[in-house]
Length: 95
Image (cartoon, rainbow, N blue to C red):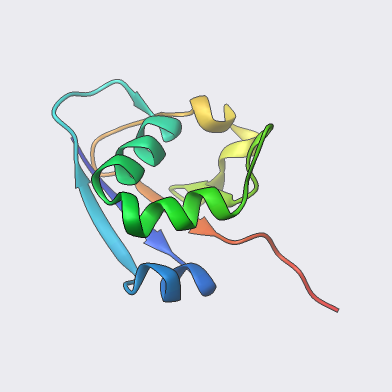
């Protein structure tokens, strides 16, 4: 299973790239599995991205799966399929 993960705004600066592709050995994964996988494989870099906005309730990142906010699907338990695209944004802010 292959999944593309794209980063936006300050996350691109932290990651020093705009996207990565993750190859998983089997199917039946969730968005949470992908976050755990990239954190484990690239701990020094992606741990900063995920943990920076992590709270007891879960990451305060905006995560889209194929253009749909996972909040409106099944949250971090949203199932992913081969060739899905995950977009990760920092929380919005402004003034």
